[in-house]
Image (cartoon, rainbow, N blue to C red; front, side, top):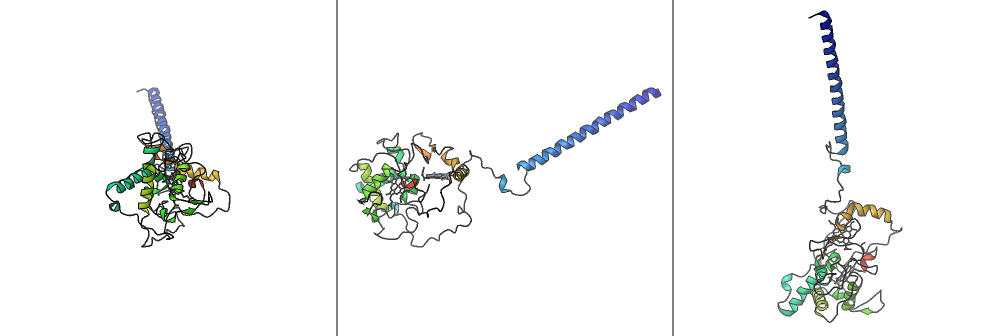
Length: 279
Ligand code: HEC
Ligand code: HEC
């Protein structure tokens, strides 16, 4: 090899190795950037971090197990707390059939009386059970335990003494934002029969633990719709829909998650509309 050629070769080798070093440096920089961004996005977490919890709308959250927020002490359940009567106490025959039908009507109201109801189309898309949980048998679930025993009752709304039938009619009128079924007909009478059965062991004036709705105290400031929206987006819309319109069930006639407002929900005369009740 001529010294001239040799020099050329050394030059070329130096050039190549310099490029290799540059490329290696760039690769190291890229890897470093990638690692940093992975840590920031939470794809790799060093310690469990609350901030990384997904608040994705598509995943329907399961109610987290101890559902009691910090700072709230759950009430101890007294041993004599009301329990709904056992289904086996529903008599056989016609009287029992009415109670069973009444239960069915309050749990699947929309199927029979909703906008596409099989018996009549006189109510919005809601079921009584949407607000009176487990057929109105659940403590702290707006149950029907004390209903029949506390009627007839002087109504704060109408100023007259209401019968149980008057009170039921109000729920059709306002909560179900619809028409009241003919009170002499099978449907209305069956619902009444079911209510009588649910509350059959409750005496007039009896104090009931966790019955009906817990009255919330009046707030000392105006309700804040802006803060409310934040809570709604985080905690409610996954089930009740982005506009509170609810989510229809597979049959497209009834709701899997009931609407919170709108034409298929309750009207502003309903108990649920009051801040002291629930929503
Ligand atoms: C949108 C929610 C909602 C729906 C749907 C609803 N209710 Fe109610 N209902 C309430 C609330 C809230 C109260 C308590 C009102 C109050 O205390 O001012 C109530 C009260 C009652 C009471 C009186 C209970 C008592 O102890 O005095 C009866 C009975 C009742 N509802 C029956 C029904 C029936 C039957 C249906 C279906 C046909 C129904 N409700 C649908 C929210 C609802
Ligand atoms: C995991 C799903 C889920 C989440 C989250 C959820 N709900 Fe509900 N909600 C339901 C279901 C289901 C019912 C009806 C209960 C039944 O029929 O047994 C209901 C009923 C209601 C009702 C009474 C019926 C009606 O349509 O008005 C109100 C009011 C309500 N929810 C408000 C809220 C609010 C406010 C939040 C957020 C703080 C919330 N819900 C979060 C599933 C959910």
